[in-house]
Amino acid sequence: MASLNDYLFVSGLLFAIGLGGVMIRRNIIVIFMSLELMLAAANITLVAFSRLHISANGLPDYDGQVLVFFIITVAAAEVAVGLAIIVALYRARQTIDVEDLTSMRG
Amino acid sequence: MEIYIFYFFSLLAVVGGVMLVTFRNPVSSALSMVLSFVGMAGLFIGLNAYFVGIIQILVYAGAIMVLFIFIIMLLDLNDETKIRFKSSTVIAGVIIPLMLVIQVLGVIQMGPEDDSFTPITREVLAAAAESEALAGQEKIREILTHPTSPQLPDTNLIGMTIFRDFNFPLQVMGILLLVATIGVVVLSKRSSKSSKS
Image (cartoon, rainbow over all chains, first blue to last red; front, side, top):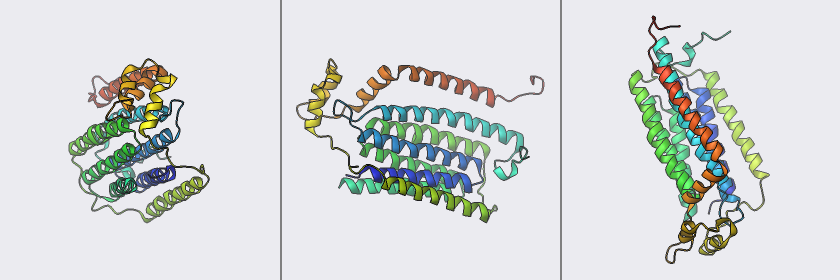
């Protein structure tokens, strides 16, 4: 069976891919998807540690998985609000390219 | 055998992530995001977290992906064929995540020496059924000590943890969802000039 370190490495790799996507891409929807990838990559770490830590009754410690459940809930709410903001932005500016959205640049 | 399943699903997740970043068409990006999330759900199920794995597929690969595709269709986006990436951002976007991966590798080296998971066997399940923490939980004990196929009742145990130990955070989460719903309605309401305050 794969060890904890394997899972942590996959999680870190996925987080790095998401970070690269946020930095490289200019389409705001794809940036948002990369953000979701980073959130989900952190979940792997939580589930791996929840499986590693055996609680008093000999079964995995489920506190970590409850936190994952809450993260997924927050991510769903975040996607709904974020996409509504993107639609409002597109209505106002007719673009979703981050290079064209410079009105807040100092 | 199990290690190959782990490799398969982690490869699925990583390849999906790379495709998400590299595809120019946003619809292809959304579909490769689903591929990545399905791979992650496989990893969760490999960690005996069946409930979280199924929730991952239902919420991420189902609801969130449909929402993304819907918005892409609504905005009627074209491919980014004309736009070239700036070489400076590409270099920064490769080097900084690479540094992060190297740091993760360094941290992993310093991890606990025994990092293998204790397997969940029949004996572990039977011992858990006798533990004090599950005293009086007849339903859970019945699943743990099933005569032919004892299972890990992880959905029952997560439910117990959420509603007993994390009851207040759960209610805060309900408020958060309500606020998000109201926020989305306010944001997507087309503001006419007369009603502008």
